[in-house]
Length: 234
Length: 202
Image (cartoon, rainbow over all chains, first blue to last red; front, side, top):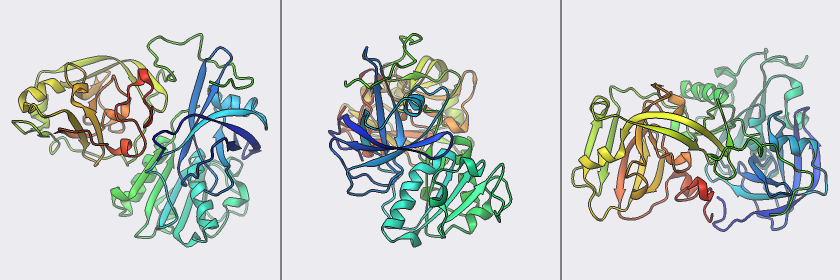
């Protein structure tokens, strides 16, 4: 949950790392750090010299920790006035304004079983949850199923691979991939689903609808399905 | 506001005066944002209720609601996630017509809108009266799609759109303010886009 008085504050860019050709992670050090919860987001605001400003929300990808820093992963959308600036102009050492962390529903605190289902850039808040599970020594609680078009479109590369994760490629897969290329299906989820898990789905609207329908087919009660839809938010 | 080095922005020249601060024109897009999966609701069993602090608690079936005088909203809608949609047309029934039947008690000051999914959102009573709110089942002359709250949603277009509860099931009238789903999760109690009341504390 955002603090009642949580104001805008300045954050310094301390690191920029490409995740794919279209996505970069930005490590930020806010002036007044607040420990976030896995799944929360920040609002980023950019201001031009004449006072014009634009803001967008981006999910935190890093696990909660005491470093005083956090990481946002941002997909570059050609029409996006904020994401194109972040990708094409922003440098380490620059300052941007941020507000957050925000969100109290699509969050997970590594204290109960969870199935995480992410499509494309929808992996970002789920990555914070996977990283939290690993750093907290609670990988047993979490399973992550992530769908990407091709291996080149997959965020976080080898860090994603592990006994907790299932990779689904919809257009082309790695040569050593066991699973056939194709859309997310019930079998992908059935093997990862514990009967007592809360399900977190994040991705585009069609992806969320498809994944949600599959979960309902598998008998997951609707009140245990949480959805975060990433619309065009460039 | 501190200036961001190198940021010039794109939206300025084309900025429509109908856009509240911090919003952009989504044009033909209508992004979908809800925290639950999209329900399938059968109008044969659908109901809408007004309860709580009213003299005449009332539940309408789908056909009973449709039989009330129809009312149309033409104008803009604004989502807290920064998109706005300009020049929309919604048709349904005015909340005023429903309250005329249910008759709020003098002590009623707020409403909690609730949905068939369990979603809730809170509003001052004054924000859903005097032609400011509808229960809407048509958009652009077509049935409201499921993804956008069909068969019917609350429409309170002068506030951020999370107040316009999708899959609305009713209004509970209260004598106090009580935070709903997003409001408990950090979002503003009122949500006026022209004042940028996005989060608690704004």
